[in-house]
Length: 379
Image 1 (cartoon, rainbow, N blue to C red):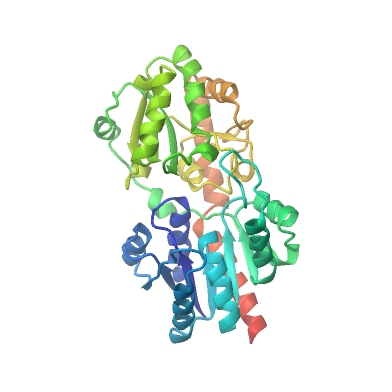
Image 2 (cartoon, rainbow, N blue to C red; image 1 turned 120 degrees about the horizontal axis):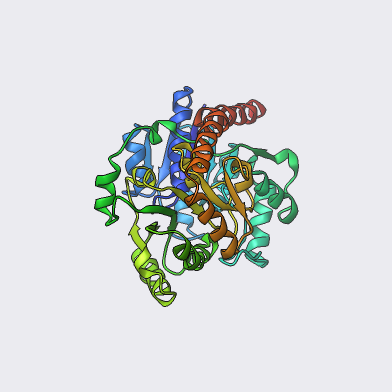
């Protein structure tokens, strides 16, 4: 079988790291994989480094019929057996191309569908059309958390038979290794004696509501009164988001305690400096940054929403807090920062859980079984 993955993203974040990881480990399992991605994008570069065949492909909008015909020609020319999409951007064109060329199409649902930045459901004609496509044009929908399964069942009316739950697998090769904390702290302007609370998310412009960073900023007002020498490191924001968030911090008189460092290629090394990570999202699929944080032994305070309880065991590997509750965030952060032994306990438990349940090898093997089942059905 020859499997083509499509990802129409220009930036590199958790979703793109998922694509890289699954392709890397599918290849290790002997699957003939290739990818259609935006030319010169971050994903294109890293897939090249993994020696995954890459075809330049870009969808300008949902009515980009030129890309649709290009994809159909690519499927025929390269004798593609199955198509695998990863974002709503390419779901429509991918599903139609699979229908026209007669091959199965799979999509991975990385997050809850049709949500706005405030965590509210959007119900309109576009969402109804998307639900129809998910129900009728895909051979299988892979969901990264049980919450996304429930979401598809309730709102898109997708049958249980069409869905399969496969958690995000983590490339442990990527997170192994050591760093020099002193040098890395110096590079981002942090004193060696500081306790570091981290926040990592790919956010652009004003589109950061769902990630809940405002609630962390609000929580920091209480944290700085209880914990000496604490600093908050934010990574993944673009310049516009950085300007907006810096202004918010200044307005709340916590600007001196925040470092906005933008997108980092060495984010795992930066995360090793964290005493803990906060993931205060209003909704999530199964955020890769939480898996990475736990894999390197950094405990997490996360919102009790969607896929997060599947990985964070409250009181064992981290803490779960109600979404949008800055007081609860502050309480748990203060507790962890003041208790070195508790952080060590959470760190040990976190590493063990990731290595047991969230390795990329596991998700790759389960994905191969999905492919084989679908392709047997077409023969």
